[in-house]
Length: 461
Image (cartoon, rainbow, N blue to C red; front, side, top):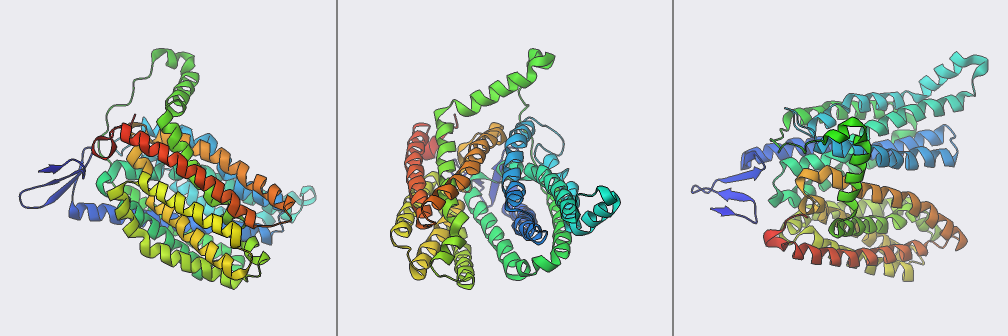
């Protein structure tokens, strides 16, 4: 018999067969798929967890000004994502090859990402070589190192954005929807393990051994992620939409842009989805951005601050898989409402009571655990709500909303905190307001979800 809500077929011998489009898995085959995807995610997360803090430490060692650090580490990746993300995602949605529509875009950038990491590792040597080559025309050793670092960092971000856009889309195409929440919970667990490994063993050595760290992690990522791409197979997809002849004769770019904007930003359901998820992401930003400054302002030492983070990671790791089960059974939209409501309560507590080290410890621990809970519980929300045929396109549209908002909020909040004499409790107030707005938007999204069929017969608009 076939359970329509679970997306699986149980044969007379009680052997489960899982279906995703034209793909069919036994339970053993599904385990193999999970193994390769999780291995790829582990190598990806080792790279992602390491690159930003190592980059910050390198720039600090080169005596880079704060504005340059903010530009390269903060603004540049978001700006690249805003430009390239939609293009790559829409192109991928319409691609048909014997390798699939996601794997080629994930596989081709791998050597360039690894080479960029090798280049970043050698920044000190290459910068010195550039300085010597320019001789009297050199702007200085430090400036030459900034140029080399900026070149390889930009290249790294350009090629990395492809994976950031399409890894989730690949999962949506190959993992059965009935268990996708549990799968993303495993993804979250793998990410936390990668974070623990890097922060416990490597970050303390980054200032003196960044060359070895980046070289080894670049090699692990290059080999590991390539293996995942070669082992994971995509199914067959329906033919892409036929391109209008008029579009081919010079108006294709403008017609495509108009279609993109119309399909992504005129449907109230998708607008509610973008707004709910963006507000939730923004709600987590204020406390994360200024947490270490808040901790120091109330007398908490860096060691206790680190222990608080380690404890929160451990709690998040323990509850990750149960949250994935809940997401599959009760839907991420419901969990989004619950998590944002709880987070609003915690941030209200932080604003009202986080005056000393002890109360801040409690507020920050609850913030971190609930932030992780939200991320795990709603990790599969796009896969559950967006249509497969336009998944990349719509997720990129949401990424634009998020990218623009996340570029504006931190500096604006920083200016406000400065005017409030650096009273960092106000970051909890901003988080409370954003979380409350997200919870309300999630309620509207949930009502719209029910109007479109709900749990039994949902069809994406």
